[in-house]
Length: 213
Image 1 (spheres, rainbow, N blue to C red):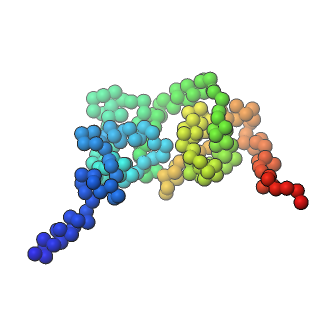
Image 2: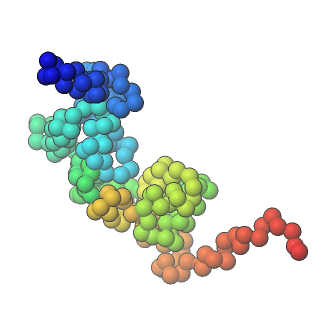
Image 3: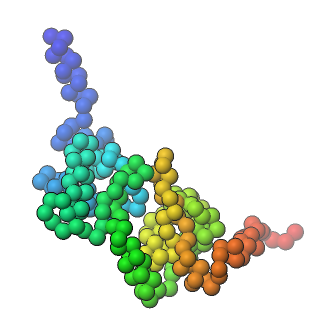
C-alpha cells in the first residue's frame, strides 16, 4: 500500500509528458518533427554558443537525444554520411554549440563582405559600433546594457559588414566578446584606435533641461 502511495505522489509531482504542464515545461517541437532539423533551425539564428541543456529545453527533448542529434549534424555537415562536405561546420565552443564558416572559406567570405557596396548604417548601428569601438572587447550583453536596448540584429549587421569581429569567447559564461576590425579603420581613414577622438567632450554633461540659476 505504501508503495502505491509513493507512486501516486511521484506521478502527481512529475511534469506532464504531453505538454499540458505549461508552467514547468517548454512547448517543444511538434510530434513528427525531426529533432536534428529543429536544432539546425535554432542554431541558424543563434548569436551565441548554445548549451546542450538549453537546446534540450528549447526543443522539449531529453539531453541524450539532443547530444545524439548534434553528433548527427556534425557528421552530416562534415560529409561523413554520404552527402557533400558543407561550407560551414557545427562546433562546440565555450561550453556551447554554434554554426561557423569552415576555416578554408574564411578568406572567401571576408573578400565577399569587403567588396559589397556598403549601405548607410542606421543610427542604432552607428551607436552600437561606437560602444564597441570605445569599450572593446565587449560582450553583447554589456553593449545592450549600455544602450538599454536589444542589440542582436544590429550586432549581426555589423558582423555582416565586416566592421566588427568575434574577439574571443568567455570560457565561463560562453559570451562572445566583440572588437572592431581593420576595415573600420580603413572606413574612418585612421591607422589605429588611438586616433579616435576623446569621447568625453561628446557626452551630455547632464545639464540639459535645467534652467540657469
